[in-house]
Image (tube, one colour):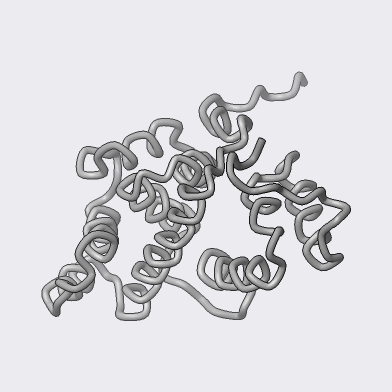
Length: 199
């Protein structure tokens, strides 16, 4: 069950363009993350949501460079989703974070207390900024940008940090209010190294 409150369409019942994207994700991951079908009940919103998601999380897909690594983007999602108490996004993006960073403990650390996590001073500054955007965006000032600049981030990076935080604030609330649950597969991903094939 992907949600407890809204019906989830069958894959064969969604528009072709959405089905093609979902099948592409299934081929890569080995399963369909619940968010893809849960949001497909409203195709126009699905398209808008995933277009913005990809522009932020896969910037090369829209021809844009980013000063943030894939792991750092997932770190922002996991940390701020925990602040928003979103089970789905913490579990799903925590799994992706573990894989990108190759650190099985990192997602749990940043979700519980990023200030004690095994991260660099640069990443700490990034998460300080993200958390202020998440919880007190009205208080962002020049000093917050200066703290990022001191760690080598520029103003476009600050935009990325803020936009990822804000976008997933929307995602967190949609997942939480609709009762969306993480796929069981996410819980174990990236926690135990894959066995090496026999020689």
